[in-house]
Length: 86
Image 1 (cartoon, helix red, strand yellow):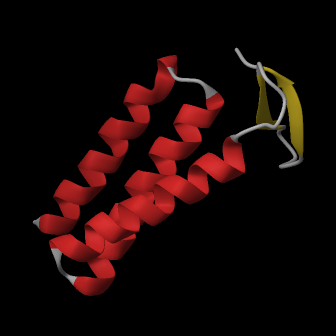
Image 2 (cartoon, rainbow, N blue to C red):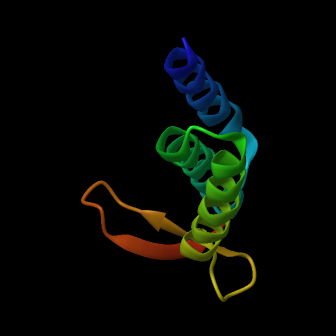
C-alpha cells in the first residue's frame, strides 16, 4: 500500500507543476524523486527527508540558469538549451 501512495504522490505533485518556472519544476521533481528513493532505500522517514533535501538541491542546480530571466530546457532530442523563462 505504501508504494501505491508514493506513486500517487509523485503523479499528483508532477501534475501540480504546470504553473511553475523550469527551475521550480526541477527543484520539485528532484525533491519528490529524492524523497521516494530515500524512503524506499532506508524504509524510514529520515531517509525520505534526506533524499528530498538532496534531490531538491540537485534539481535546483540542474535546472537553474546563470542568466537572470533565463531557464534551461530540453528539446525533443534531449539536448539542453537556454531560453527566456515561460
